[in-house]
Amino acid sequence: MFEFCADPSSLDGVRWFSCYLTNGVHMLFYQSFLTVFTLLAIAAPLSLAFGFAAATASRARFLPARILGKGYTSMVRGVPDIVFFLFFVLVLDQGIEFIRHSITCPDWDQPIRQGANFLVCDAARTPQGNAPQWVHEGYNFGLAIFTYAIVFGAFCGNVLYGAMGAVPKPQIETAAAYGMSQRQVFWRVVVPQMWVYALPGLSNIWMILIKATPLLFLLGIEDIVYWAREIGGSRNSRFAYPHPDWRFWYFLGLLVFYLGFTRVSEIVLARVTRRLTRGQATAGGEAMRKAAT
Amino acid sequence: MIKLILTTTALTMAAGVAFADSHSVVRLGTEGAYPPYNFINDDGEVDGFERDLGDELCARAELTCVWVTNDWDSIIPNLTSGNYDTIIAGMSITDERDEVIDFTQAYIPPSPSLFMGMDDGITLEGAMIAAQTNTIQAGYVATLDGVTLIEFATPDETVAAVRNGEADAVMADNDFLLQIAAEDDDLMIVLDPVSLGDGVAMGLREGDELIAAFDAAITSMKEDGTLNALLVEWFGDEAVTW
Image: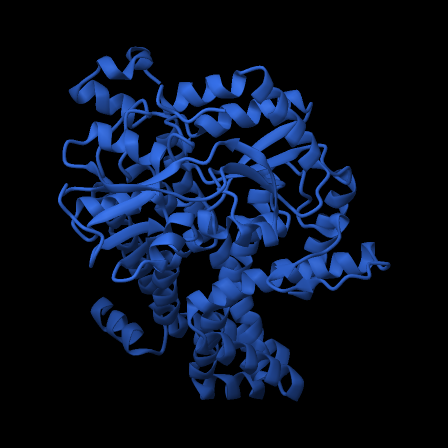
């Protein structure tokens, strides 16, 4: 990066570190923080959408919808995250390949499952073996995001279901007395008011989601944990910047990063809670009203 | 949700048509954590003996190759399921592996495996030996009576286990250990070398037509001496050559 970095072996002290911390692998390490933020940026709204759908389905009068909604939330909530992550990514991958296999290679006569192997015809391989590397990485990342959304969607679904039930009954009855239809009551009274009840639960899930991002490493995605372990490991003179085992410092860095990130989240969430509490018929809303007068 | 699945399916199928020509790009799978065989260098690229070898083989076989890295633990399953086309990761030929995948001819001759520890006087009896999971060395240590095997996912962790005293010695390929022992005053080669495996070769899916292409390229490199030159360049003057 800097001009004096051309010959790392001649450097020492600050200069060595400034070159070391800006070399190629460190750039990849810094980029992997973006991977984590991207995951959060996509998985969080998607989980909320899944959760909203699940909560709505759980409240439906139509029995199959209710079974589907409740089945989804209780099943995912009951299985350990890591098991579900490893399992679901595999299922999704093999499911996609199986569907494409059935469409593209109807004449295939060999079994797809051969021992530990899952073998489909070449045309059904997803992504294609000779696709560029970014397609492979993007596909794996997409599967991971989808799995996060499924898992955290179930938690969100449970929270939102409870929040919808916590909206005071008299308000719903009043709305109905004004002649609103079921749909109008739901969208105009229940949904706008439920957030304040949902927020404590949702902020908890957000924190858990942040702390679950290192699971990406388990799914073979080169995230911050992967690079911290990779770069922190001892490096002999084969490398331009040899150093002993520094994993301690890299993991300490990750620890600080996660602590800082969750702290910032807490501050933002506290503000959002204040905003949503205003004028609500809850203990918090009441306290705010009294303080104002 | 169903809509989402359908859209992704449609997208991937459209992508499939565009890249239908198989083997237009050969994906070389390696571990990237086993210097000097293969490692990720400071620029974030695959480097090492096998990087030079693989690039040369692809040039001779007139193939377009790309490098991908994969954990050692799942390197064979991901080959058979088609995530990449070859394994070129310091993998020794063994009968167990040969049942699942096919090997080219060896590009590194059979060479001894070594133990490295901090104490010259240790005996194998009652020792704790670190080795990487699914390696021939781990398989060998597991068969020894009175020796405890401690397995790790990456080569670096096996060495770290010796440094912090968790294991009495680490067992691995000689070229990996010799360079580490040479640079670290605390670590030294201990016990006697053991001959394991039938040499290091590329692994491919069974019956893959690429095997013949790579075999021919390896033969030509052996004949004109470039392979020996590469072995000496990366493994030093004492390297076992053809």
